Image (cartoon, rainbow, N blue to C red; front, side):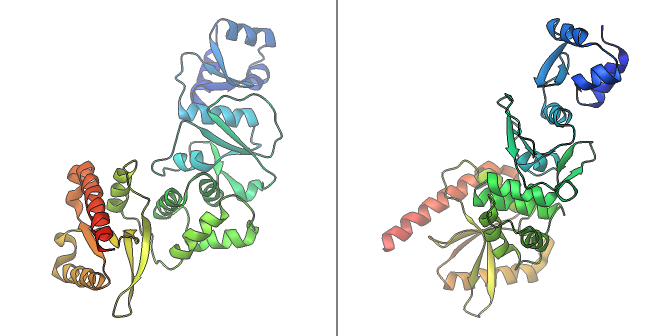
Length: 314
């Protein structure tokens, strides 16, 4: 029989408790803990951490289990930290955890352990508002750069920028301060910074993000974000979503009701100037959200037609 105090603690910890808590806080002898496992009351999640069999096995449960297992000697990192911080499209199936510990224990297949000597708790980890210890935004950024390709990383970085977790200047300072040139993901961050440091604000609008999400998995090459183009006037503009090899760009933006005639005329003049450079510009407004799937499929059809037309000219 499990006491109400144990049940309350497990509830506070997303359904898990550690063997250490059971034996030291609740004075349960080891044989009693073993009996609860044998009787199916608890299930071992990771070595030394038990889940109430009646509690669901969830993303947050796994995160809490790791925190109990390592007892503060490490932090949730990479896309797991990003998921906890609210970034979009972050995987949940595999949990990323960074620790300086040199452990050779067998771990469940859903866990990816990152062992590192690059570990400064004051700079690399912080307690999130749900009690979990997660990578600081900058350390999280490095984890994402090591895990994702360039396109996916830049989407995540701009999402973090939108959420005011990081800025490009802070990322550049962090990169310089820690002299991380040889670490995984550094070149990915540097390529993003080359563009992001010239922007006054994150390029990724909610509408742009929605379209990019809908394009995921479709048969298109990864586009270039914020592609610079110098117009005949000498002005340099940045195209939101671009395929430079076929001079095709997508510009998700606001409708007339948000910008009025002046903004519409400015956009049209810019599109004509792009046309002088041989670019084909497609604009979407908020009505795209009525059927994001169809909007994405339309982009695919236009891309293919544009590709055929370019090839016929060669």
